[in-house]
Amino acid sequence: MEPILQVKNLRTSFMTANGEVQAVRGVDFDLYPGEIVGVVGESGSGKSVMSMSILNLLADNAVIKDGDILYWGNSLLNFSKKEIRKIRGKEIAMVFQDPMSSLNPLMSIGKQIGEMIAVHNPELSKLEIKVQVLDLLKKVRIPEPEKRFNQLPNEFSGGMRQRVMIAIALACAPSVLIADEPTTALDVTIQDQILKLLRSLQEEMQMSILFITHDLGVVAETCTRVIVMYGGMIMEEAAIDDLFEQPIHPYTKGLMKSMPSINQDRKGELEPIPGSPPDMLGDFAGCPFAPRCKEARRICGKLLPPEVYLDPTHRVRCWLVTEQAKQIKISQDEVLTNNAGRGNNA
Image 1 (cartoon, helix red, strand yellow):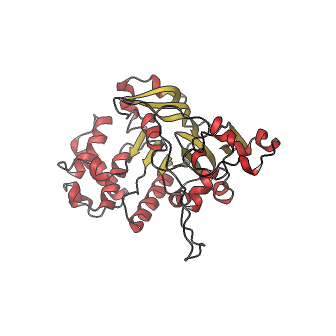
Image 2 (image 1 turned 45 degrees about the vertical axis):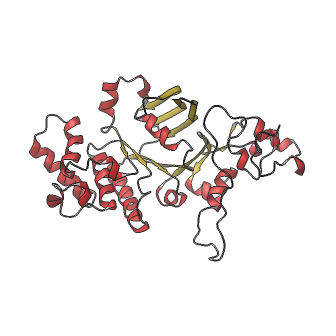
Image 3 (image 1 turned 120 degrees about the horizontal axis):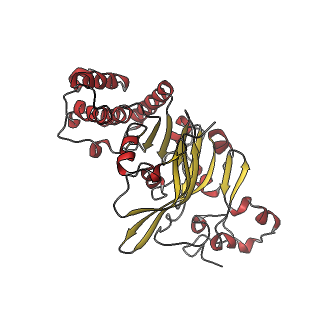
């Protein structure tokens, strides 16, 4: 099966007064028709910048320095601004994490949804657009659509505003939906409703979804495949069952241990990952996770590990799974201690 979306060796940087911030550093992945792929990682791992790069929604100081983004085999990076606007919203749509700041507070909900339809379907009359908007409001399960059509965003709850954002994204029946932390600001009950809504709509419309989140629990409920990002790179990728049953990368394991489990002892404490994400300004030697990794060896701070495929659907970027590491007997004193200098010890 041909991928609907391919990201190849993507490198995106921001040019700042302090230097080049390398937010995405060589990301590769495929998205296939009808599947939901989760992208997880802490804040600052490059998830959102990667997704913004796909639709060219980057800030003025951002530069895609290398790589390619293919939609049905066509390079989006070769598209003009006019051509990418035709794709954005119609073929590839996005749901953002903060609906209050994404919606115009002075414009009615109906008009905001209708704008997306009108831009890509200029031949439609106002009445035809309104009929489609009301249908979308019903589809995302907003009650009393006729009444809600003329209301402003401040008359909606947080969950209802997120449903409006989903309606805008689905207005032109896109083939790919990028959902960037769409449930972050919502309470658990509303979060569950939004996730069920997205799954239902995905099955109904046969969309491909790239689901970006920092919550592994959300991924477990929603996705079929998971990409784990850290330091602007992919640390691990696997089918959902494989990742939860046998996580390989120390960072993936750390995320799992920091997440509450239904089987966990109620008196037991969660185990946070010590330290902070790396400074993305300039280059860093070795594995970006080495300074925080309890299993790091000296080589981890010196050289970036290669990607290793454990099977056709499970890949890991870690020295501990390479043939070199397996062949070298590593003594205990070569394990780096957990301090700020780890990762720079040669």
